[in-house]
Length: 375
Image: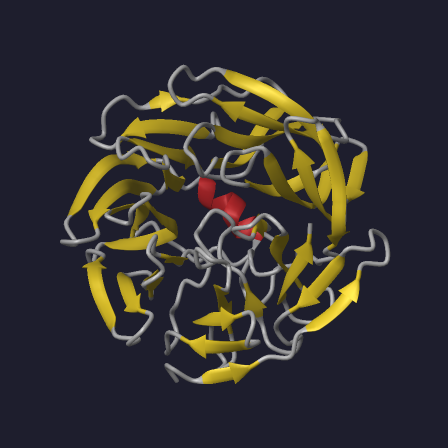
């Protein structure tokens, strides 16, 4: 029920390998998870954060007050995409997609809910939709309804790539709900992200399994012009989980190489498209930076290539300028598909606004729960 207060009982421990403080904020018998790692999760002052929770049997959004150790229910009913939602730049609203069809805004004071945009009947909303810096525009992906299918495990994810679904990259005016199509192709598109503080530049990807994609990362002008490739894959090479540094200065991403036990943090200049390998890192899946990209947090992950089979259990923090790394804590998540969802056990770490904590998800104690680890 909207407005319901859920008391939480935080549990604090010291990680037995690193000695860092780790706080579990949600219970271990109910699925709770954070939103996608590059979506705004914390309020600007860091005192509250949004998360997805199944306290009513289906996933809804909650606003967690860290000091009070309690969560307020923001949405109700089934159908919330609890990964793609985000807080507005002014902390007054939650934006999210309902039932793969409706882009909704929730007023955090009144909990009044508004449908800002309806997906056409012949299309389905897909993945994470991302706003520009001042929350006036949003980019998203829609898949033709006749081509869409639920991707409830990784084998279906792989098979879907080869169906060449009809997809369109869209831009939505968040004040009027007006939609404009930027790009439409018989190709699986994903990960649309506005460049921060640049209303003219959008990144997106050719979605699918790493070994099958021709070239993953692309940029496009917001008017649909000048589609350009960020980097071509070399043989045995792939790239994943690109994101904009929050100050808009560069695009970061992870580089994989066959038969290599490490992965690599790389950057791409959005103007010159110069790509640089910044540092070797443990096999992390998702990376996210602080505001200016000097600190990076990543989640160690399974890494299988050739005869190499690893499973790194740590949350890592990397100092790009110094070229150093440190393990913050063990996340020990299983990475398993749960309740038909491929993402819910993924850590998806990111920094708190003051860079003193890392927020992540893990199922190491039962069901997925929210954790914060002191950096």
